[in-house]
Amino acid sequence: MTITYSSSTGIYVNMTNRCPCACTFCLRHNSDHVFDSDSLWLEREPTVKEVCDSIDTWNLSDYEEIVFCGYGEPTERLYDMLEVAKYIRSKSNIQIRVNTNGLSDLIWNEPTAPKLKGLIDAVSISLNATNKDDYLKVVRPKFGIDSYDVMLKFAKECTGYVPSVVMTVVDVVTSKEEQEVCRAICESVGAVLRVRPYED
Image (cartoon, rainbow, N blue to C red):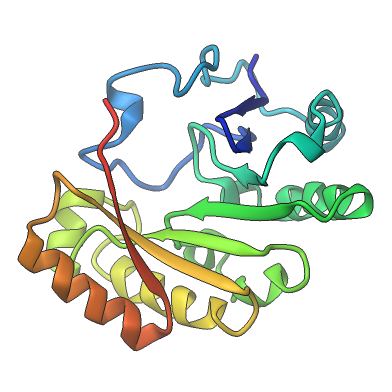
């Protein structure tokens, strides 16, 4: 099974297929892989050791970053993810990024942003909508209507613990006008907006 895979600049870590959301645009609906990876559907969740062993198969000096991002929400395994980040830190200064839906506080029922301090260099949080009603329709989180506000709170808190906080919207899901509203929302929490292309 594929635990790690690469793009031209990054190594991606696929630790879980669990996710509390069912986004209407999710790549998982259309394909079983991204980039040149094999299937990202896991037979089972790999152990921390298996993840670290997989990372060891790469020459980290050939890449700009390691990204926790696979066919699931990485913070579903928050504490295991942080153990892996500690391992990476012990051997390299490579940038470590987490791509997340920003709902880890709801997954774990506790504040999670402080736990990223000193281990995670960047977080990319899926914003995807200008308000909680549209977010509910597009992201379809299992936690319901309050998810949007919790996600924004997590993003704001991350700015106190993580050097780079980016929030994303998908180009085909949002209009230019909505993207500008999203940009203002990002600025209000101290984050930067990235409009990312939809990948088939």
